[in-house]
Image (cartoon, rainbow, N blue to C red):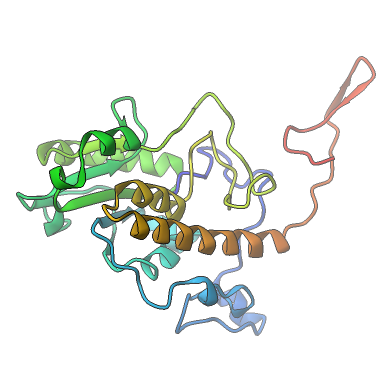
Length: 261
């Protein structure tokens, strides 16, 4: 789930997003249309697997209609080129006609989203061995944190009707999330600890869920390699953040919490 945007003022003190295709064309920059779809100057094709990796788990990504159109740092395009059994849908909620994967009687649907009733994914996996969870379908919500919460709420009645199990990776809403300056895996400032990009969420989840450990390891390593490349390119285009004093207290200079000194 790409929940790394803030609910309010998402661009405050954040690195600028990559320029869109039209702007790239105006500036004479080539786009890798036959590969990753990114500007050639930040092409990640060499980091993608030669062919999509097959997994036992099917991944269904519901992405908010605004996510791919407005977010040039979206990780879903790279994810779809990396996994064979990934299916993406554009919409604000899931319903019976969204995908036959969800309505199959033999399906085991999991919603990967942190909520009060969610079960730690590692705990659920330890209590349900591969033989007890055939036709596993992992549902992931792709959007800002606010969008993901709205999609989870809107999809709730349908997911309950098909017996979807709510699971989550480790999160802590009491701890501030990391920024691009603090991690090699963060494209945008996380609202709190544990909020990660869609590609990282899927990587961590499949590492836990895949019956064959070597497949889970391969998927995680591959997807995180792609993410590191994206973050690396983004960092190269960042402008150094200069401390901007806001006020003084007892002779001491107070700096913004995200200032680098």
